Image (cartoon, rainbow, N blue to C red):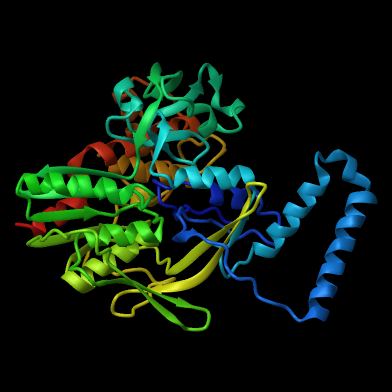
Length: 487
């Protein structure tokens, strides 16, 4: 990595899934893999695949070497007494090493804790308060408040910064997700910062749908598919049935920031649109054998006069499958940014201790036989995401002031420009006009005036960027462009 500090380009609305969080925690095994984008793995289900036989001599040598090393580390290693449950820790680390390969970041061993978190994240419905928060910064900024959720009912909103859970500062909480979730009907107090205010919001935990939403804009049905989880197809079916009752014949399918999910779910979702018997995707295994996944014959498809699909850099995996199937089979128009490009399929093998192995078993191809792996889908109409939404805030930087040059200042300039402030430059030089814009922001949001930019102020500015990007429809240039296509 270059020693020169640069603005790091990472999708602002990045959500880190449990398996990716574990990969980050385990990056000391082999070499660091760099920034891992938030992509839910495209899973084909819980199957125990056939094991590949090794020659007996090679198998015996491998087993003997591994067992000897584990025995030495368990019994003779000087620091062994300092590690709780040493034998389990050593075995897990050995497996992490085997499964951590730069060529395939989606093959991974998950210990029981992370396996459970991963499976919970893929259910699409859970008991909690109903928020999605950023893990791309040192602060927990709310990216999404799910519709009809306890969080929405409590008055929580996008851009709020989570500071405490039941009075405990987030810095002191090892697992904030575990602290927020709980039994249905139980209470939790979330303290959030909104501008210069600290608000204690009382939430009654309950059922949350985190997979899909739908609403009507004019004569267009807007279907937002947030993830391809276990329950997503049924939720989509309910939304489409409601659209039909309203006579909707034009539909916009928003797949932005959808990291994918289950193969069976995306096949069922596609079945609501594609003619019966259509190919949704093709799976190609290691031996180049092809399996065609066709629509679910039990699902009756709807007919639409016009279909538009929104994608961005974080549209991945199963979401890309759906976008390509709609394009190639129904000539749907794709609008937005080039997608992530995850063209592989994973399967999982669970173990009795709750851990699991998740490995890549195939690549997937579109109905026409196209692969987007490491390439992505190029939209028919390219509408690039605003730079502010692709620029991550630096962490733990020293405060900067007028006449200095820094990455932090450049990021602030990009953010303030997006928010509509008068910015004369975006090169990181802290000019007098940059200071004036910063002070105007402080005044607008009731913040104490200061001459320096520190990480706390930049976090508040970032929270406003997130809020505006989600709430101000005039800022959603991709959706505006998509709706124009219907006219």
